[in-house]
Length: 316
Image (cartoon, rainbow, N blue to C red; front, side, top):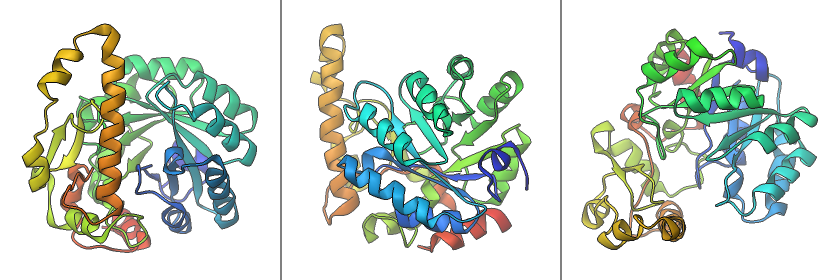
């Protein structure tokens, strides 16, 4: 199926394997490219710039015709590594960069100079129009069925709103678990989809077997929103541990968040604590199971190789 996304990235299928914190890795993206889609990894999955550089080099070596690879950059002030990560990606090269949580202007300008395309996460029309003015190559419409940090609008409402107004391609993110969902998003006006949660339960994913199996055992009804990870609502699997600690901010955080001077620091502290807990749950055996996922795990019935997951997305 040819769309503006397949033409932009020279891929066979209009699918991006979404960047997932702690989950995405070189092995997953390599298999994605072999199967004819694009794959993306958060730059923050690498603790050092040298590791990020090595990953980019490995993916360049693994790239095949019909596949593409990119990296996700958090472009706001909370990511102290952002500017150096951008520099490394521009030096090493990749097919695209996905920006999140901030103004993409600097990234767009730097990436375009070296031929890298930039796609920007947006959750509403205001930001969609803004990134278009800044020169983004596509807008990723993060809807209310996305895993992790999500938008407020439904897949249909957000996709139609953006595709009817913007001239750049719209990529729908959230709510895709099988081929029928992709067809639905394209019917709303999307030029492609970004798919994350179904790939958590992949053989190649860099997380524990317990996390993968949880995506098989739990379903859409088990996904809840929590403020206990980053201070911003985030979707997680409603494990017994999540039920125990609750999903709302503490009374102290609530009080401090009302203070404009302290709010930023409270969120930074909460983000740090939450990310450490998420990393332990994803990579170690622990009773503190905070597993990030979206409702599209409803269609995950087994832990499979990436190539088989893509086959299901493109053929069933």
